[in-house]
Structure formats: C-alpha cells, structure tokens
Image (cartoon, rainbow over all chains, first blue to last red; front, side):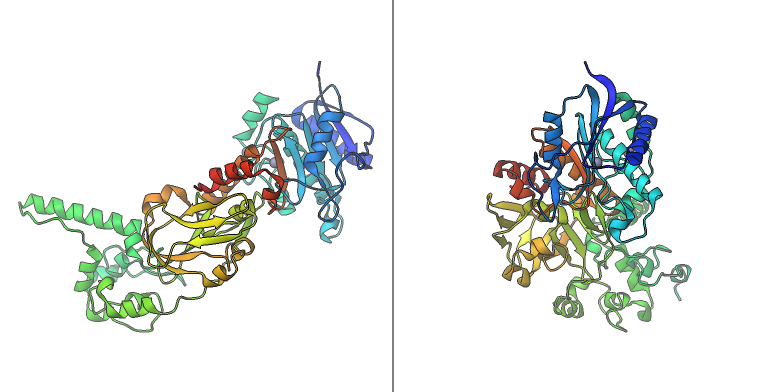
Length: 179
Length: 311
Ligand SMILES: [Zn+2]
Ligand SMILES: [Zn+2]
C-alpha cells in the first residue's frame, strides 16, 4: 500500500531551513503531505564523478528507485552534487516521467556559483521552480513551449528566473487529472 | 510623374528594401523579405495570380480571348515608369550606387546581372549573433530550420547557405568523412545531398531547398569536423541557387515556431532514450555532444532516423 506522501531524501548535508522551505512549497502546490528521510550518503554506491566532479544523475535515480524503499507516492532527492546525464552535460534536475523518483541539484542555483553576491530570495525561487518542475514530470507532464510556464525547459538560470512558478492553462489541467 | 508611384511614397526603415511591387507602384507599401529573389517569393506569386485573375475577369467581360501566360505584372508596370525610376535591383539592394535597369527587370537575360552573380561568393556573415539556447540547444533567430535539422540562410546574393543545426551535431557526435553533391547538381525537393560516414554507419541527409548546388565549403571539406565544431559558422555545407522553397514551407520554421519545434524534438529525444527507469526528463544547460558514446549503435540509428530523417 502506498501512502499519499511525497518523501524528501537529502543526499549529503543539506541545510534544514532549505528542506523546511521546500516541504512547504510542495505541500502548497500539490496538496500532498511531505515526509523526510535522514541524510543519505551514496558516494560509494554510484559510479565515480566525471567531467570535473559531476555525478551521473541517471545512476543516482537508478539507485534511488532500486535501493530506497518507502511507502510514498513520490521520492524527491535533493543534493549539492553537480550533475550530468547521458543527454545533458550539466543538470539542474532529472525525473522519471510518470515514475516515482525525482532528483534536484542545488549546485548551479545559487548566485555565488556565477560569482554574484549571494541572494537567498533568488536562490529559493529557483529551487522552488526546479523542484515543482521535476515532481510534475513524475505526474506525467513533459516540457512545455510556453516560456512563462514552469514546465518550460530552462537552459540557464535566467530562463528559470524568467518563467513563472505556475503551470500554464495547457499544463494545469493535465497535472490536476494526474495527481 | 506617375501618380501611382507618388501615392506609394512611405518611409522605409533603415536596412529594409521596397518590394518590387511597391517600387513599380502596384501596391502602396510592401517590403522585400527575399533579397529580390522573386522566383521563390510567395507574395510575388500571390500578387501575380491575383492580378492575372482580375485581368482574366476583365477580359472575359469584353469577350477578348488572350492566351494564358506566366507573367510578372510588376515587370509590365516597370516599363511604364519614367526611365530614371527603373532602378536596377542591385541599386535597390545598395550594392551599386546608381544603375538604371535596361532590361524591363528581366534579370535572367541581363548581362549586368550575370556579372554581379559571378562575383566571388561573399564570406559567410559571422555577424549572426542573436542566438538563444532552447532546451539546451543553440538556435539563431536569423536562420530558418527545416524539420530534418538542417538550417538555411538567405544570403545577399539570393543563394541559400545550408548546414546542420546544433541538435543534429550533438546527436551525430563525430564524423569520419563526408560526401556532398557536386557543384551544378540540380537538387529536387528533399533530395539527398550529404552522406556522413560515422562509426555506427553511414547516414544521408536531404536538402531543405530545391535548386542548383552553387558552391561547397572547401575549408570544411579539408576538416569535416568543422560541421560538428561550428555547425552554424565554419561548418556550413553548401550554397544553393534556389528554384523553390515553397512546397516544403510547412517543414520550414523560424522564430518562435522553430523554438517550439526544438522543445518537442528534445521531448522526443528523451522518450527515444528510455532505459531501465522508463522515460526520464532532464533539465540542463546544454545537450551533451557525447550522446552517441553512451548509447548502442541501434539506439543511435533510431535517433538519427527519427530526428534527421536520414536514410
Ligand atoms: Zn505549460
Ligand atoms: Zn524538465
């Protein structure tokens, strides 16, 4: 029996205030309760990093789907690790379409990464959009051509900043019928 | 002075040019979007049809039967213009300071036109800079994209320059060698014009334009991986003297339409690459140029078939 819960699993150390923020974000958006697992360290269980310390996102998703058994509707992993996938050389996140697992990296979401002064508001806004976007993939939504829609495929943080945190009139009904 | 011409006087934005229908005074305002290549212009075709239809109705009403023939009405209108207003198209394009058309705009029969056409190929315009990344793929606003992931750009001399787009080069990954149609070859719609030798097998791409191969990028032939390294610049393939592009218009995309298509292509890419996890959708900065290294040759062949329409 699967509980109607979205479980959050931090991979490595993640600041608890960030996790509190995202739990609230998810509950507000999807109207589904969240739960949290303790920090999970997987560096010994996945292939070593490539391309200057980037980890294979698809391998991490594979690991999550096989090794972490929780009675949850969805499993969201959050990491500070920098990611790549067989399709993208650098990643913000990846998720199983109509599947259980989603993964988000914080690595490239902070202003500091781009040598800009820290800005927590901008960082949390990006984090919120990427997390909601990835979870929406697990509810069957694909990439949307509307630049303002949260399901627009962002190629950089400017794209993330420019899109709204909302689903467009075409994506919203699809989401509602799938959750 | 011709009164119709007077009525047509309007401000032409800098860098824009009057359509010949406007220049001839048939319409009051229309800008040229096709480098005066009227033979490939939808507007020219529509206007010619409309005027011929009107003329036919007028002729039928007075019972005069004239043989049907293909004509450009602006050509006729030009003949009625005062001599100093029959500007040569190279003057209209700003390529020569002053030249009056001696030929009623029958450029195909004009020796001056032939001379201008025979000039050395202008170098590729590296000023195309309005690029944007769409779903991890670089796209240029100035280019048109065909659905087989070739791009085309209309040059100042009326020829189309073609190449492969950023998405195609990332899927192809590495090129072992190529074969191209020869200069002078008459290419039909969607006729194969490029063979790429790849470690997973040969693939053949077709031309997005119907026309005659006008030139081939020699520098690229000496270093075929320019196609991969600079797909929009040094890696261009050939120029084509167009006969028509209109038949394939539904497959020819520009601006927002092209960007929406690219997003759909990346959705399809993710779906094709499903694995043990089913389909996963990733969000990132740039599509990897090493996709082919991470998949089987069978999977790769499926990708190039679906996206590049190769044979
Ligand atoms: Zn949408
Ligand atoms: Zn996505």
